[in-house]
Image (cartoon, rainbow, N blue to C red; front, side):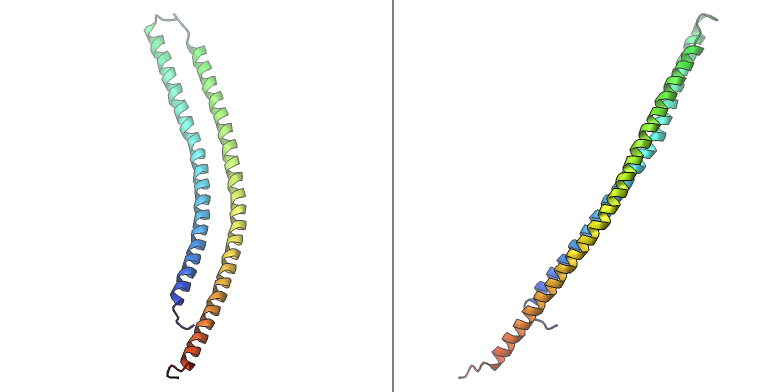
Length: 161
């Protein structure tokens, strides 16, 4: 390839096209990572909810223990209340687990669907950039040919005549 005034322009354009292609792939990968990270965060929030439920249940039990200790012996029975609290927290924890499992499953399905989309889109992007680069190379070759012809014509042109 010969150097002409347009060589630097074509090099810059080619670099810009290649960088755009790389940025497109990077954006797709970043989106994949964010979907996966979101799924992980939702999944780990289940443990946090369960810990919070256990802590709260323990606090309610401690409150009942304190009430029971402050009352005369056999003045009130708190076992039924403790059992009711346990059942309520267990029920809420089970419902939360089921909800989180459904959300995680939906996220995983969305992640799989996005992976398919990203693969197809990447292929289209690569084909488009390849076609653009081929067209760019052809234009560059045509400009180079014209520049060579102009140089040859300029050399043949006799200024003294």
